[in-house]
Figure 1 (tube, protein in one colour):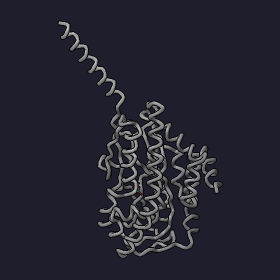
Figure 2 (figure 1 turned 90 degrees about the vertical axis):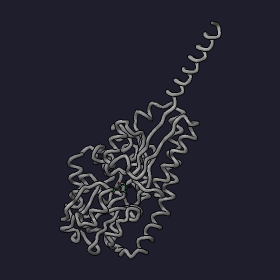
Figure 3 (figure 1 turned 135 degrees about the vertical axis):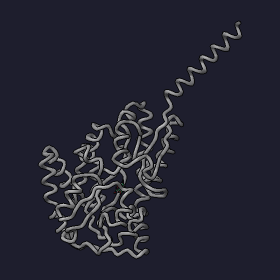
Figure 4 (figure 1 turned 30 degrees about the vertical axis):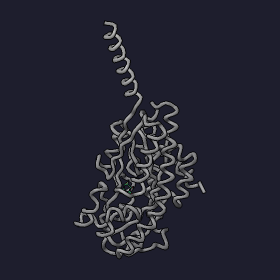
Length: 327
Ligand code: GTR
């Protein structure tokens, strides 16, 4: 009898310990759109390792790469709602949900990538992060995504007039559709995964992206003219569901944030290398690179895009001006 009671007490205690353990341990799932070896993929895997290490295995993260868990707009919703814990997102498709974050999708708003990071590290970055958190997403760190330029199959784009009548794939965001329409082109919002085939079959005539994505997707094979317009410099985030993050202990919050910052440092290093390597790869494959000496006509053509954005978001004028006046 005595033994039976002891045994069941021990059993109950074990079950309780297991339960407590289960409540503390967290198994996260993460989304990423890119292929193996891409800087963001490597950096998100590193984030997963670091989170596990720094929380002594109390938080684990399983990463799903290549967009296997869905398109980017869907994945953003999933992280907002908590179906997924984390994701590496471009701020382009976050813009339609978070007006403050949409400011980075104004063409030519940043002078270069360094300027973008200076803004993100200051008050402007805080305003963007606060806007995102209010919509359920916390940006733990910022990734580099370089500058985006136009590419197509028919010949170089040297001036906005060359875009006239062209069907151009853009990410889902009205600002990008406006950007193409202002040059007389036909914007075609479409998921990243569909672009190769759309270019190949002529559903679109062109698209726009940075060097690494132009190369990793093979778009250069079907759109071999790359015109260096650098019309958009859009940051990316390592984003987490706000409730998941705010529900962590202070120690775990610090550990996860540290892991994200280290992951971003790695991403930016790898990004610099990959930008150069991708350019070399596509040039080696016969891509014609058209440097655009004078970008002023493109910048002027974008004025109506700014006017529409500011008319729809008058309260964000200070943020636009803050970015424009940041050195
Ligand atoms: C890439 C970016 C992806 C995705 C893609 C696109 O540069 O890293 O997150 O936004 O562009 O054009 O859809």
